[in-house]
Amino acid sequence: MAALHRTKMSRAVLRERLPGYVGQAVLLVAVIGLAWGGIANFLGNVRTLGVATGYGFLRAEAGFEIAQTMIDFGPGSSYLDAVIVAALNSILVIALASLFSTLIGLLIAFGRLAPHPLIRGASTGYVEVFRNIPLLLQIFFWYFSAMALLPGVADSLHLGAVLLNNRGLFFPRLQTTSAGAVALAAALVAFVFLFLLMRRLLRSNALAGAGTLTLAGLVLAALCFAPLLLLRGQFGVDSPQAEGLNVAGGFTVLPELMALTLGLSIYNSTFLAEIFRAGILSVPRGQSEAAATVGLGGARAALLIVLPQALRLALPPAAGQYQTLAKASSLAAAIGYPDIMQIVGGTVLSQTSQALEAMALVVLLYVTINLVIALAVNLANRRLLRHDGVAASAT
Image (cartoon, rainbow, N blue to C red; front, side, top):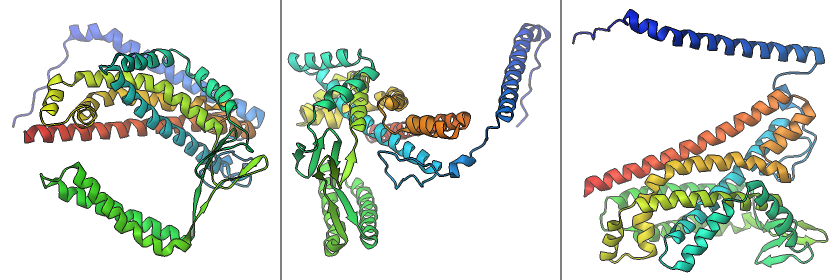
C-alpha cells in the first residue's frame, strides 16, 4: 500500500494561523513562569520560616482520637492511619447517601408519573421543596433540630437489639475468633464462586427465569453457611447496652453521620428523580403495553421492563450527580463529622503546619473518589448497553 501523501500547509494558511500559535506560546510561557515563580516563592518562605516539607510527617504519631473509626485507631497511631480513617469515613457517608438517594429518587420519579393525582402532587412537591433549600441548611436542620428531638441515653428507643438516642444509632456487632473469621470468609468465597457459576449455567437455559435463580441462590446460601452452625462457639454478638450516660458495646452510627446522610440523600434524590423521570419518559409507551399483554403490569412491568431501559439513558447524567454528592460530602466539617476535610484539612493541617501537603492530600483523595465513581458508573452503563445489544440481536 502506498504511503499517504501529506500536504504541506500553504503560506496563506500559515500567516492566518500564526497569530494564534504565537498567542498560545506566549500563554504557555506565562503559565510556566507564574508556576515557577510561585514554587520559588513557596520554597523561599519555607526556608525563611524553617518549616519542614514533604510527607515524612505521615509516619509521626498523631496524638489525637477520632470519634468514628472503621479500623483500629488511637492517639499512638500515625498520621497516615488518620488519613485512612478519614477517607473510609468519607467513603461510608458517600456510599450510604448514594444508595438512599437512588432509592428515593426512583420512588419519586415513578411517583411523579403515577396516574393518581395525590401521589403525583406529593412527589412533585417533594422535588420542588427540597431541591430549592440549600444543602448546608438541610444538614443543619437534621443535626441541630431533628436529632435534638431524640431521647437521652436513659430513655433510648429499643428497636429490637438496636438502640436509638441522641448519642446515635447503636447496632449489635458480630464478634469472632480467628478460626471463625477464616471459616466465615471461606463460606462467603465459596458462595460467591458457586453463585456466579450457577448463574452462568442457568443463562444458557431459556426456561430458567429470575425466580429460579433466586431459589437456587437461597439453596446455595444454606449449603455454604449451614456448616458454620458447627462452629457457633467461635462467634458471638456484642449487643449495645445503656450504662448511665453512655452506651457500651455494639457498633455506633454517630448523629453527625445520620444527619449528613439524611441531608445528602434527600437533597440529591430530587435531582436524581428528575434524571430518572426523563429516562422513564424516553422509554416508548409500547413497551409497557407489550408487558401488559404478557401478564406483567404495574410494579413488575416498571421494574422488569421500563427501568432497565430507562437506566441506560439515565446513568450517564446520574454519574455527574453522584460526583456532586461526593464533593458535597465535604460539608461534613460544618457539623464535626470526621471526614477527609475535617481530619486531613483540619486537624492534621493544624498540628503539622504543612498546609500545602495536607491540602494536596485532600485534593488527591477527592479526585480519586470521583474518578472511581465515574469508572463504576461507566462500567455499569457499558454492561447495560451490552445486555441491550444481546437482547436486540436475540430478537
